[in-house]
Image (cartoon, rainbow, N blue to C red):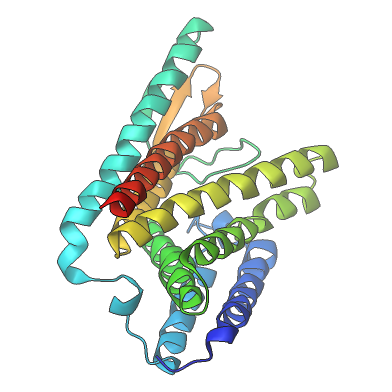
Length: 281
């Protein structure tokens, strides 16, 4: 791996800035998520392509950043288990709250996108489900590959693991600022709502980034975080929905916050326990 150790953060910021520019152009102007595709995927394909190029320039392989085939099945099962367990509790809490309000709810399976403003576009049909799965694979491949696999591995070459984890998580949080900015410019949010949503969305994304980064650092592979990320985005957010007589996913943001906080606390606690055991050993 030929590089200047002092330049790892700078080079990572350059890659982030280029990917963010493409991401912003797609979200603000192309708006692929408002088409039949229901997903902004151009920036993800660009990010994967850029990562291919960067890895070749640095003489690194995909295996070097955690894509290890021998760990795929067991790690994927662990990642799905973490997400499913956390959101089982979140869904249960949501159903209890709705029942207490006298609004019985049930689950439905259809395709839609995550919305900060609560708007829902309901898409049915096997084709939409398959597209949803495919685009979410592209999404987690790019985001986990770049933000966890590459940034954490690369920055750790010149700095300590904790600094690499926090820098990658901060960048991941800022990456998600584009969505509330568009909602503000479109008039879907007031300035106050924008401020609250932006802070909340960035902080939540940073926590998710720290969780997936810890899973990456503890396991040495990308698959646990990628599986958790995929199950979160594809199943919990895009495919499985809580429906009442009044609407769809009215408490989705609260559900996501609850599920992610549960999994974050669990992973952070396990990481701390593991570190202490290694120190004592």
